Image (cartoon, rainbow, N blue to C red; front, side, top):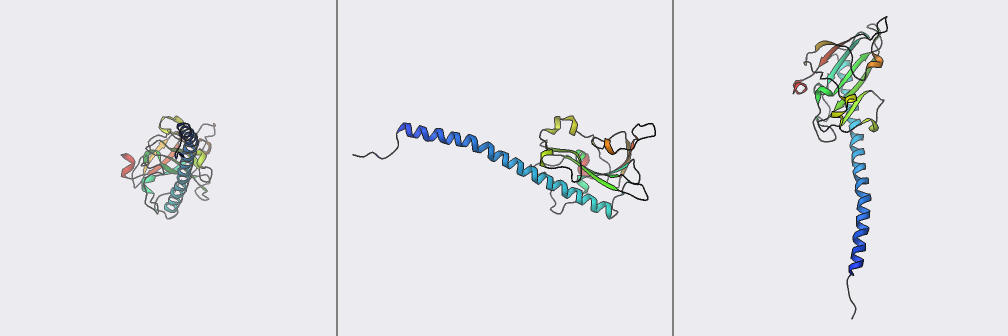
Amino acid sequence: MKKNGFTMVELLAVIVILGVLLSIAVPAVSNYIVNSKKESYVVVMDEYLDGARKLIISGEYQAPLDKNEVTILSFDVIPLEKGSTTSPFGSEWVDSKSYVAVVNSGTGEDPKYSYYITSQDKNGYALPMKKEGEFGRQDIIKNAKNRMEVTVQSLCGIENGAKTTLPTIKGLEDVQAKQVSGELEDWDVTIYSGERCSG
């Protein structure tokens, strides 16, 4: 009489093979998902940069006039077309650490605006301050809340603009104006933010 079915050894062999395949496939799929979310993160950063540019060009928010001036727009005053307020990793933005900085590298008569962006979500995924067009998915880091190089000071103002001076803004040191003595000049900062930023 012929037996139908598998022996114990055959079953164990199948289980071992499946285990090996899963140990290879799960990290690969997980890595693919994270990279896909990082790509989406970069796309969202570009959307915030475009939104900030439209607000500056339309005159809704004041552009910086001098070399030591910077205009900061927190994410909560930059409307996106899709209206989302969460990062691709599924958590809210930390608005006091997520903003676009507009710097004038020209003069008041001949302005040359450069746009910089930094962000962090409540899961700790972050983009350290980067100039527009100079970042990609490799720049998105995890567990940023414990990494000082991406921890930016709280920059919350009011929707009508709050003025302050700051000795430095992390990530903008290379474009900060210098005095004749070579020391960095304080930034004259105008900060625009909404209710979410202070929460």
